[in-house]
Length: 209
Length: 59
Image (cartoon, rainbow over all chains, first blue to last red; front, side):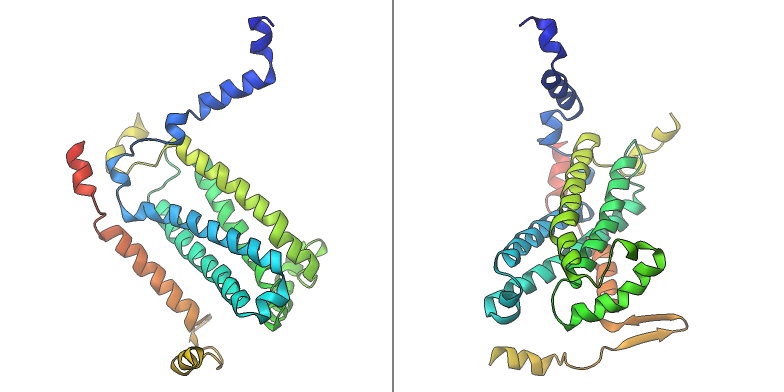
């Protein structure tokens, strides 16, 4: 095969483009700027760690099913782990969001990083709602009957029915986790590719160049 | 015995407490979580990060 033929292959072009945009030294860097040594930068990775626990405990709940998580002690324990890791996930994500908002973290060509983060926040709220209505208990009945009015008033009730537990469970364990994991991957790759936003004082004047 | 002891210390079988101020209405549980988030945010800004001085010296 000639060199020009190899250059035209989609695999060659994709590999070169990927390595150009996401070089390995940026994906797994040896060092970070000194301003990253602050507690405020910890909450993004804490959110990611909580998400791993959420997905892991969710997989265990999916294996054994509702009777198990309602009746057995270990089922209660895993159910509680799933709930509390979600609480930590949102707790850390909101602090991460506040930190990035006050840093104006969309500076320096990082708009897509900010936008994917915001969409992740909104998608996480929908994922949590579908989780609450999938518990198969009185709590889920109460939440679904209260929240349906909000969805119906927005017109979304035509295809997103909170009173349909099967549909809500499928959204919760298939569609929304897929969207979340995909968005998290894009968000983290963008953070790696663009780097962490510098503080205002170290970037002073750069916006005016 | 353990769970009953905790239940006696933290009675969770009552209606939730709510704070009301004009049109704002928030449960005590949600208000506590928001206060904790604000405190954690302020602490994250103010508390020194381990090894920060060493890293700055190395640069």
